[in-house]
Length: 313
Ligand SMILES: Nc1nc2c(ncn2[C@@H]2O[C@H](COP(=O)(O)OP(=O)(O)OP(=O)(O)O)[C@@H](O)[C@H]2O)c(=O)[nH]1
Ligand SMILES: [Mg+2]
Image: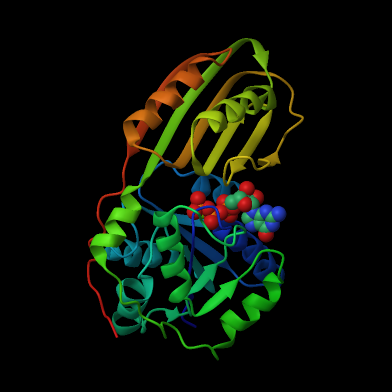
């Protein structure tokens, strides 16, 4: 049986990874094997670490979205097919749209012999609308091309049943989208991915490290999605903020004991220019009661989308 390849799109922080992980658990209970492809403009992805830590077979496409890195997507799916999964979920970059024309239809045309191509799911963002015109543009286009919508709080099992039923057409709606406007909207965002080691003497708990850091970053940055994943000998902690003034979502060992070393992975998407974003992040990290070693920092604006191919209406 060919594995089903199911693309899950939706805005930054909408809940794509959360949905994929819940779906993987449910399918696992039904005796099915699941794998996932995560996708981002940069590398060092919190989502991949997290999904891997949850025991999911994962691969990733980095350095651009599925549309611009189409051959990488096909390769990643081919690698995962070796695990003989029943379903491969592929999470698109949260600022990406026009997925039907650039990814789903080419998959249907050229790779339908290896994969059963599922309808495009778009996860609704908990915020019904964005007051920023660039974010609004991206989000509206994402919704317009969905074959299936998933909304938080609704039944994951019911969504899966529809996804797997074969009764919903895949790639039914293509967009008529202005790529110059699309590029401009994405360029309003800045991406920052950092890997930092913090050594604290006396040892400090992850919660004591992360809590004040989130407060300080939130006060200075227009956050679209901030994900922070920290590991120490006391366990892991994942914190996420999907906007300013919201409560962070925390998972993992919030009550973990103090530790002398924390390996931190930060993925931050913000309405900002990359240079100021990086300066703010470095300044606020420097205020931590710990000695820092910056292992890697990437900070950039997404480059204009140039699809590998496009099969319009
Ligand atoms: N309460 C609740 N929180 C959710 C749900 N889905 C996602 N979240 C939270 O929303 C935040 C963002 O979820 P993710 O699944 O990381 O979102 P994403 O779409 O994968 O984000 P990007 O990969 O950055 O585009 C996380 O902190 C989740 O815990 C949900 O169904 N209910
Ligand atoms: Mg994600």
